[in-house]
Every structure is written in C-alpha cells, then in structure tokens.
Image 1 (cartoon, one colour):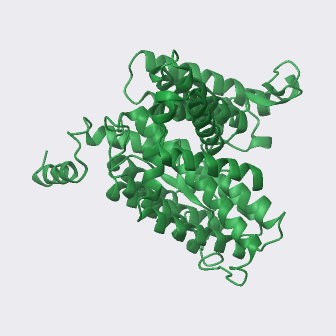
Image 2 (cartoon, one colour):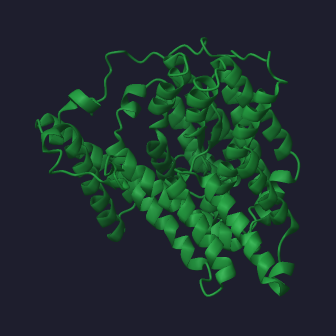
Image 3 (cartoon, helix red, strand yellow):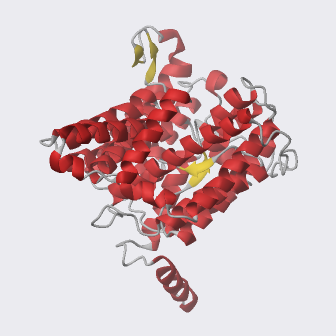
Length: 461
C-alpha cells in the first residue's frame, strides 16, 4: 500500500473511528453500496409521484439526488452513523395526492409547507425536545419498533415485487395458475423475486461476505438472462437492461429550484398541512433511527443514542434543503438497515451511499434499471434480521409485551411506522397507569405527554 493510501486510511480511521466500531473501509463500502441499491428505487418513484402534482419529472429527479447527498453527508459528519436519507415514501404521496390534488394547493405551496416543516424541525433539533422524546420511550418499545420495521420492510419488499397482491382478503399471494397468460410479463418477476430470496438466504447461511448485495446483483442478473432468453417480456414492466439512449446529461433543476409560494403561510389550512407533515416525519424518523440503532447495537446501556442531536439535525436540514431544491420531505430511510446488516456501523457507510447518489446524476439509466424484484430479497432478509429484536422483549411481563406486540403488528398492518409507535406508546401508558403500584411510578412523564398528544391526534386530525 502506498504512503498516500495509508494516509487516507488513517484519516478515515480518525474521522469515523472504524476500529472502535469493529469495521473496516471495505465493509463500510459494501454497506454503503447495499443501502444505496435497496433505496435506489426512490430515484424513479419520487419523480413519478411528484409529476402527478404537476412538477417537472427531470427536475424532481435531480432535486431528489442533491437533497439526498446534502442530508446524508450531514448525517455522516454530524452523527457518524450509517443512516442514509432521501425523499420519504408516503410523505411524497401525501404531498402529491392529498395536499395538491385533494386539497387544491399548488405544488409551490406544498413545497412551502415542506420548507416550513423543515425549519420547525431544525429548531426542535437544536433543543432537547426531539432527543427527550427518543429517550422517554422504554427499551421494550424500542426493540418492538426494530422488529416492527423489520416486518414492514419485508412486507414492502414482497409487495413491490408482486408476491403480495390485493385480494378479497385484503392481501393475498400472487396466483400463478390464474395469471398463466401473464407469466412472461409479471409472473416471471414474482418467480425471480422468490428465487432471489432463497438465493440470498443460502448465501447468508453459507456466511458469504456481502450476501445481501450479491443476492440483489445475482437476482437482477438472472432477470437479464431471462429477458435475453425470451422468458421475460419487457413490454409491460420495461427492459431490465440499462437504457442509455438519452445520454448521460443531468436534468435541469431550474423548474423546481426555489419555487415556493408563501402567500398562504398563516392560514389555518396551511398550518394543518405543516402539522401533518411534521407529525408523520417526526415519528417516522424517530422510529426508523430507534429501530435501526437498537438492531445494530448502537444504543448505550440506558437505551440512549449518543450524538442523536446530530442525526436529527441532518434530517431536518435535509428536509428544508430538499424543499428549496424541489422535492418532498427528506427523511431517514429504514432501508439503511440493509447496509447495517452488511456490517456498516459508521458515517463512512452513509458517505459511500451519498457518493452513489452523486454518481446516479450522471449514470441514472443504470440505477433506474434495478428492478423491484431484485431489491425484494434484500428487504426480506433485512426484515428477518430486524425481527430478532423482539426476542429481547420480556413476554412474561404483559405490561411490556402487549404494547410491544401492538407496536410490531401495527406497522405492517397499518402501513406506517408512526402509527405503530403511536399505538405502542398509548397502550404502554394506559396499561401501566391501570396496573398501579411500581409500574405506574415507573412511567416517564414525557411518555405520558406523548401518549396524550397521540390521542389528540386521532381525535382531531
């Protein structure tokens, strides 16, 4: 190794404290690539959703990349955690389909609401409020959040690849025999996803380093072979091969850059929109960070996360910057757990992911070609790993176990991390108050206030 390489490694060690976290540059690089690949779909999905609100699709793509880079780099240096950020799913749908299409606001007004939410988040992150909320949640619920996110991630993966479909029982499994005529367009992708899950599991059992990343790449490779052999028809879901016909140019950001409208900033309806965005983002962020930190063993003995303020501030600044650039709320992605499962433990993982967001600006055809059936195995395996956190909950103590169970069940069933936290917190407080004695005395006052706020949210919003 050359002197310059040794110096670079030494700098990375001092900056990110790799040995202290029992990791290496190679491990962090693999983790960063894995996290990026599991969430690269946002670069295709977010512009598509926001274009329904009338926004320029190319500009949103560029804004999403840039906002992800800003927020993730801040996360790397302010917190030294392997969390990666981008425009949040669910929040972008609320932006486009509720605020703009249903409530009738312009997308410029909606961006203003996101910006206002980001500014409020920044102020809260500079105070002990968000950190106090995190620390008030008991360890049993923190473990439950981790397990619940695991189920939620696995469900998203199975749904995105078509294994889980709508049915008369709300959800069901894709029926190959009933859809035999669509095998070459849809069924083959479902089959590839299921093969990919088993392939990734085998690599995991055999302790192959980077099994999640290899599982995604091999599944995608199998899909390309199926397309070349004529087993997969790209006419419905598109080609699995990267399309470079449009060249490598970066789409202009000017159609969305700084396009905000403050004319209705002080109206009650606008305040309600800001509150809704703030509420969902707050608890999705806290829930995601809490669950992933618990899974990766980053919490201290009291269940607290060191340097939490830096992580929350990165999220808040990312949201405000994203609004200025032209995208919906930026949040910490639960898919960061994929990189953490590969051994990512420091901000260097986040930095590698941020670099790939930068690269995707110029090589977008490659990243946008990654199909959902190739990322599904990663999400399912990560879901399995995160579910292990539920083993740390004492199920002989019903006052701890029942709220934990409700928290875990609500996340995939209600399709929301924040709803799972809400039901877990409310049930925890009510059960402990009813139990009396030591259990009542052990309640954190901040947790009680949080439970009241959740109840008011359900009653009035």
